[in-house]
Length: 275
Image (cartoon, rainbow, N blue to C red; front, side, top):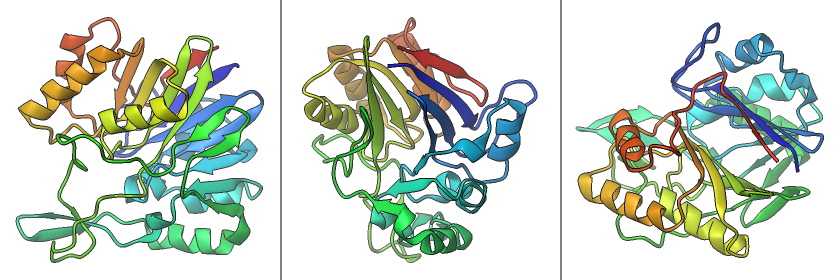
């Protein structure tokens, strides 16, 4: 299976492209075109044009979770590619806040994106369990939280007062089998990297993981979490780890120290091919 993935949006960008706090991947898999997340919506279309990518060809849009920095481009893409189906967990529509020191910052899906999904109607496929998107392109559905050292990676709440914790049950991952193993795509990995890989390991019939790419949300990870994450990865070290977006500079440095041959930080414009 030929898999071609280009990073359209990331916190870092290559020459001629624009960076943004967010994430978006363009994926071409056996003749199908998938937009995995849509960043905040300000740069992904221009970056795609610069890279020679025609977003009008989009067959499917996959939303890893509902935060604004992954769902802001929904109105643009649904107007440009009205044929595209949208795959997401229904909880992407909930209100969500990051509350620090009593100050609440809304991080929910933007109102314009919510309205576009409402207008799309039956084009939206609500993902409440594992799902096959296209032939051998799989969605994890909600990810069980099995480990005792991983959390959502931030002070996320369902209310601005910071009373009701948001466990981000909408967090999901996409994975594709290749001849060398699974290619796993992550948005922010709020379920935890180890939880996510364990879940996909079970769903795939224990296939090895060849590559992991996306946001790892280890920005706030403490020492114990990092140590236990590295230990877990040593048990089934992917051949390639491409941390993006919210992974955190210190966490990426630790991963590069532990896996110097495998880790390559991602950036807008990075292209990856898998067979």
